[in-house]
Length: 346
Image (cartoon, rainbow, N blue to C red; front, side, top):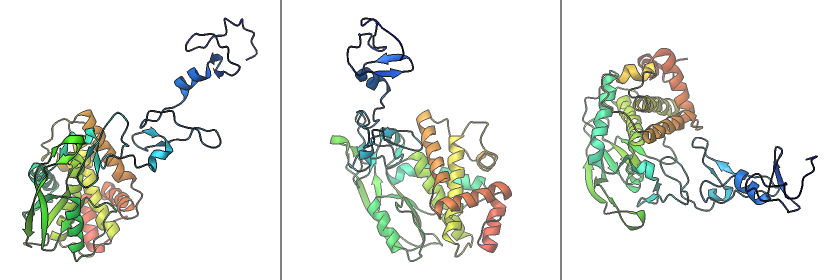
């Protein structure tokens, strides 16, 4: 420090008590008790609320969510601390998540707009069909849309003869085969211990009336995520109904992600003059959306970011290739080129 102090004048800049310890900390030219300095400047874990420990080299080491910025101790990645199945945030000490009956966890912010049964999802499904009509991509066929349990979704995926590409965690499925599936027809309630109870399912036989038998979506996700999954799966249906055959997974999944992204963007930007030309021109005539809460808007921005930053070669690279083509040539010309060549225009 290069300064001389009276013992009573050498005081902690935080608590103003004289520093008598042999060791102390400095911030700029201001002295602190080591304990006061730690309270002020040492980061705390957003999950357990404890000080983030130093590693073997004495450096503070933590993990941070790339979007939410949630900082937490490294051991929370391996100690079974729950994450929200929708927004990926880690469950903190002061925020108890809801336990779904298939082992997934849902944070309270995502719970606020969650869709739990098939009946609840029908208005959203019709909004998305209207969105397609607003893009001059009307689907005349009445395709059943059903909310299902994760096990039912996985069983239906196994029953599909066509070898479609799927993400590691399947949340939606466009069926082309006749199957019997268990659907969720009555909304469960939240019981003791923040657990979902009283879920009612029923078996439904799906018969093939056209190229698409039904669209299945995983229950227990917030409205905007459910809607983006529906928009994605409905694009699979549109492609099949309009004669698009044997597309490479990167092309088919990529263009489906493009449409899901467009729908999400139209929702997040509803009522904003800064909405992109692509989303505003395609959805302005069919939008029935009201203003979003800041919480839901932030969730929507996160889901948009997930699509845009996906690192997978099929969904991520496929989206970026399809989005670049759509921006340059428009959606209709991009689709025409895909139908003729099986590739994105460049």
